[in-house]
Image (tube, rainbow, N blue to C red; front, side, top):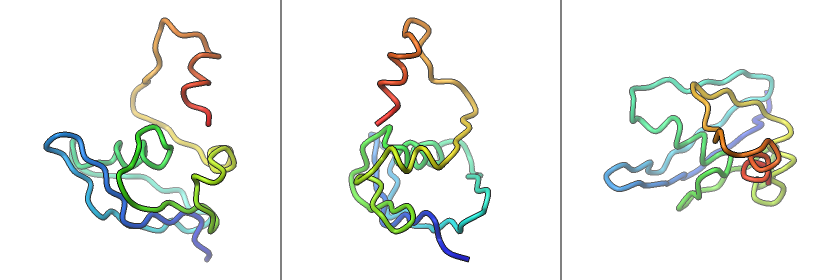
Length: 102
């Protein structure tokens, strides 16, 4: 089975918290989830994949192409479900879309 998503050397830090040298591969046609203790870095990893936070180091490739090259293609092909909503009540759908969409 071919790999569809590859993360290599991902690094992101917030104060005392740090993701350091996170690497993994997701195979095509697989449903994948992150399981771990609170504060383990699950959300930070996903936010980094979606470019909702800026990673400090590392590469992320989707079907062999760096996601930075065509973020919209990547986001159009995946699905993400968060445990809580991060929407702002005072923003319109169009304003929220402009924050999330590349």
